[in-house]
Length: 175
Image (cartoon, rainbow, N blue to C red):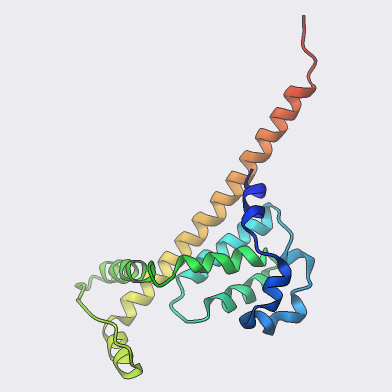
């Protein structure tokens, strides 16, 4: 079941090869393991995509693609999962990461506004940077681990169910 569901949502490899941000990986994009879908590949891709989604930098897709290529896991899943952090979800996710980091460091959470210029951003990060980055790192590790384990367990559950159904079909009925 997970394999069929994931395959429905996966983009075409040729479209990803043509993506302007992923052209730097063009010579590695022909690797069949990057497009193969199995338990190891899907779970690793979920781990990478969920981890990179919490990294507060631009061009997360490029980072996810590079990590997927290095780890030889499914590239489309890794790249797609970084879009969990999008313009709508980023503010609450990153505020939660900041709040978690501040709580763990024993610091009071302060109100702040993110400025649109570089100097303002540097001054805000001097104030909230340490708790924010700690929270992002912890959320990245936790969500990556949960994603990896969840996909492995779901995949295993699906395989066991299919085997049981096959066994049920092949066992002759007793009169």
